[in-house]
Image (cartoon, rainbow over all chains, first blue to last red; front, side):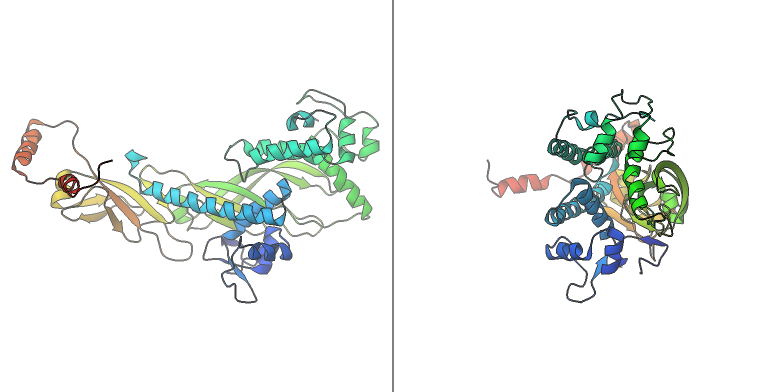
Length: 108
Length: 319
């Protein structure tokens, strides 16, 4: 799915976001984005290829990290750490919500 | 214009140096940043802190702020007569402006003048949570959103304005899902592109269903005899009731799957509906029920706790 062209896009694992789109939509520079990938904070779906593609759902996380960078004056390494931790929190929250959905009503 | 005490907001003295101001800001920002804090009032609080810091960290803006004099927070006031001439432009009206916008505008106005007039600026992106029902998620819906946003007027000055706009959410939404609506954010200025609208979908809790991705979970209360003997029971789904076959020997906590009876997915397909079995006994027994249960108790050899004894015999070490 071409994120820049479509008027309405679900930002989920089915939607793909190119390197250029992520730069344009996140507020990161190209160099910062490459650095975050180098630190392992962001993983392209196709790390071996020249034209990186990312899962569309990371856009929201990256935008949150960029807000933190701007508001708290973080350097890229700290931004990478924040991004890793935000991702981990999102994953844990999703797991908790899945498990809560499976708990019978009386036990919640 | 209402006065805001930026020093008090940051909890610093009026003669605090830039380092102390920065430190106070960071401490408060860590606590209230909306991407960190779960406090519902955090966003508003953070905005106040950020506004205060933006003004006090810049020596020029801080000097301009100090010359407004000291007033009580929330008190209506007018800047001293020569203030506008010194720091802003004299055409400025102070009546309908927020203090933070005034200071943001100071820098904007000067930058614009330096560039000799017209400027181009992309519109702001907005992020907002849209609360919708399960039915809305299934069918798609249009939500009306209200937002107070900073917008530049034709002179490049910031104003906070109430904006109300409609956004179409296509079917396929679920809790926590994000949607990007291109060009539905703030208006660009001077030919700049319009910003985007990012919607965070939040589903209202439903009385019967709990949501996990596009799957739904439903508690299915069964009588002990329905669970033991098997039964066909009616189960409500989003598209009307269906009959579900409960196999004999069904136990509590078992998940019975109704394929494709969950929420529709954005592109194609649907999630599943899981009925989670609960075995429920009547709290008040009739004479007849009591007699039947008694008969069952006397006649049954079933022992649900047989494994307790086996495990203990197998030598589970005592602590």
